[in-house]
Length: 115
Image (tube, rainbow, N blue to C red; front, side, top):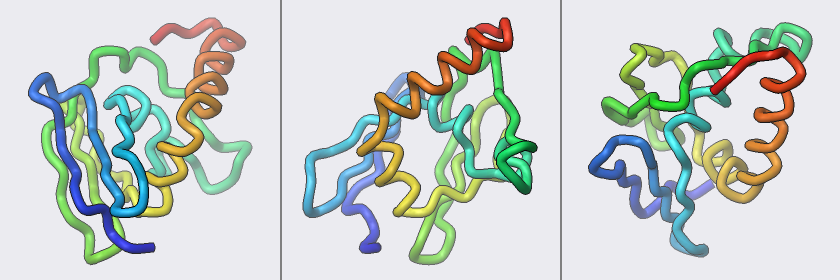
């Protein structure tokens, strides 16, 4: 996948706007990026090992670091920094934002956890 033309963190550090040349900019909340981190810490090594991450409603993005020409590492203010967000993954999160967010909210509810 072609890299985005722009990655912009909002002034309040709670929103990442990702712009690819062939589509409208996608706004991805820091909370969503954190709780859906592609890291092994969150995703595990199989679907059964995936962790539901609560309590990240106010998480902020500290910085974004390039990883080759295919991804970025996002460092959050809770010091989580092991997720490598590929262009494909960011594109998927943007395109399926509502579905991913609803699934996360449902998981929290089922497990009695809060944002």
